Image 1: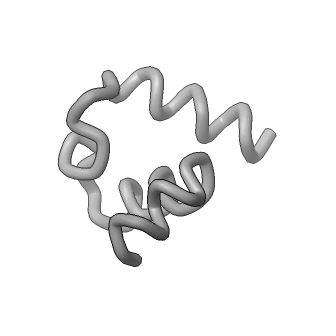
Image 2: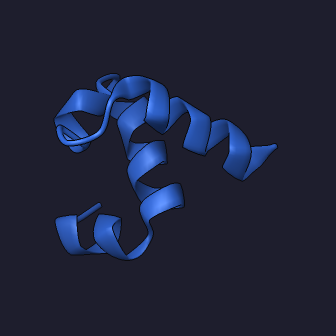
Image 3: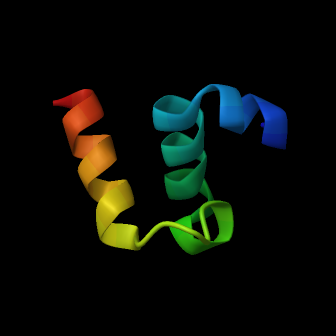
Length: 45
């Protein structure tokens, strides 16, 4: 997905893309991987 789409759908688009790309640091360089993981688990729990 595009950058703007990711920004508009933070918890869904970015986290999903991060896992599909296999590297969260490439999608969200400003957020520690553990924070991203917590957001994903909290979002889909």
